[in-house]
Image (cartoon, rainbow, N blue to C red; front, side):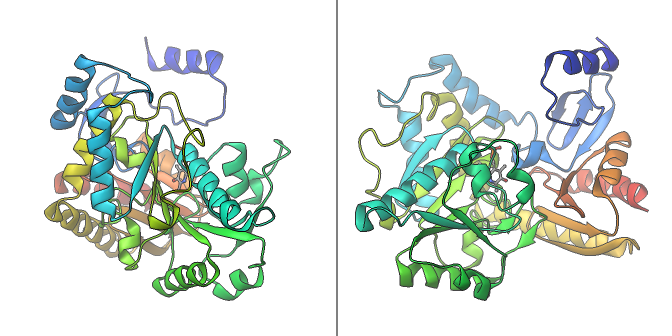
Length: 392
Ligand SMILES: *Cc1c(COP(=O)(O)O)cnc(C)c1O
């Protein structure tokens, strides 16, 4: 089939919730992808931060297929060695205590929200269930995670939304204190807002959040669905701040390309969920957790994390050197990069796609880059050269 036939088929049979770029991707190797006619694309978005190890990574494929050849699904009614060892790995790497395996980011956040509310209910009873999240956050597309998302645009059509959320602007501790009423049980935040514009939480603000949660016995939930799994040059972005959250959610990069979402709890919430309080059919799938184990073992190596930092610095520096008039700010940590522009990001991501470079947007005025963590300098240079042409 041709590009046009496939796009036509998509339009006819798939619900139109996405304005796709006119590119029909077929295969690739690391950060170099190809469409069905063999046209090359440099991947600066890794399927929205999912393909942490790039496309078709041999070691990851072996881990997944070895597991697939044994059994494709078990259910949570029986023990699985792959699942246990992946949970142990997550606990060891995070310094937190226990893990719940689900299937997506939104689901991980749902689990985190349930845990935070039950923590409060068990200790303080009803009427202490409000969660403060941040303006311009993004936490998912289910009814509850839409409510948790601090963007008015997301609070339309699908009424009634889950109650009990209020929003404070990022990096403004006074505004947060203003809405900190006795009904609040938790604070939910991304260490760097991804979809909202690659907005970085300052260290001072983060430390204040931790303190407010400690002083008021609130549950601090970090949504690390985009920032986790080495994306920012640390295994988890909270490591930049020097303290742990009470609950952390992970998804995107964790599976290396397969769907997974987990929430990890520290000591405070370790015993909140017990028998029958939560569940999932697909979660902890042995094939997917085998892929996740491979990702975790590799991206957590100090040399690997160092490379992520270096590549991120290199990209930010090269873009700064381009001295592009419309670029207002280049920000980010590791390989999570935002380029704030005077203009419409989509114009440039479209041009990128037409010229062989896959990019993302964020917020209203940011071009976002989330390349595979394994991207080579050769691929980076190729991508940056296309970027320069597109943005100049
Ligand atoms: C992508 C994302 C989600 C939602 O994940 P899904 O897998 O799409 O449900 C939630 N929070 C953050 C920070 C994200 O980047």
